[in-house]
Length: 192
Length: 215
Image (cartoon, rainbow over the protein chains, first blue to last red):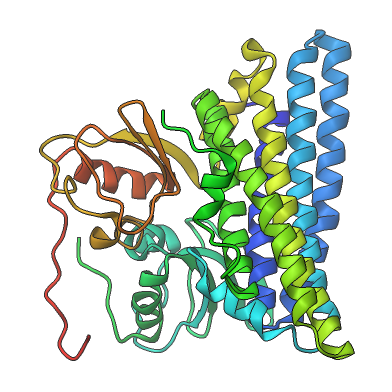
């Protein structure tokens, strides 16, 4: 995978993260999270510009206009998704208390977003995400972790969970309870 | 492939009787499945999936029109109207996501030989879109997606099922699985390996004892 491909992949993953965060900012009426979406948008715009510039350079160098065209089109579509995330986050930033129906609608969706604190006695304390395999074991995908006052976005396998972390995750409604109990320590990971 | 006309497709939303809340939920769900399907159409070079994305884009247009009308009719005061305008902005954002999905599938129309790099990139994404086939000996056969709890068990979301020549997009909880179904799924590598071991029949689907005190 060359640099251009890597950047395109980062663009795609970031846009999806932004959507999840934007909805969670609305769900929890959390302006901090909405602000983070705004920051990510600036970063993503720059990334998209770089991608488009490099795609054009490639046409000049390799005369591979087909690939450049596809890259530019895809980057534009992904940027559109991030703009939608911004639009959602802007509602959180503007409103003191968003319309209650918005929250209810997000809660009813096929994919829900939930937030839980890692408590004393939880199997998650001190474990890495790679080790606990939260996504495949609980169905919940970790979108972000709030530690003290900072957020860790799009954590990876080596991200270690700590006592007091607040995990924002996304998944099917029937996985929420297990996930919450896992964080509180009422439920434990299966042995493998 | 079975095909439904636009009116028939829209029947399932029952727009006359749904609330603003239900339409907004539907728009969020449809927009997200559209993005997954759009990437899947590119990865598996499937004009059929691309066509479904285009159909869903039309549905979204209709949902978006209906939610605007319903919201306007429900505003009683200036304050109501202000709050509802924000709600409509969220609806507009999900429409925007669906438009982006519509743009992604257009990539399938051109430059077939120039596209392989796209599926290559998508294969490397954090959450991957993959496919697998359900074997005769799998104990998933004959059971529904909801009964199994596929996503909570494996973290893999089934975004589409190919059954013979027919496609089922965004299957429901009560959609039953059959032998030889091809499932298009989204999730992690790890989740995929787990699901594949169940789908091939290598592993039995886990059974949990009923917990007491629950309904």
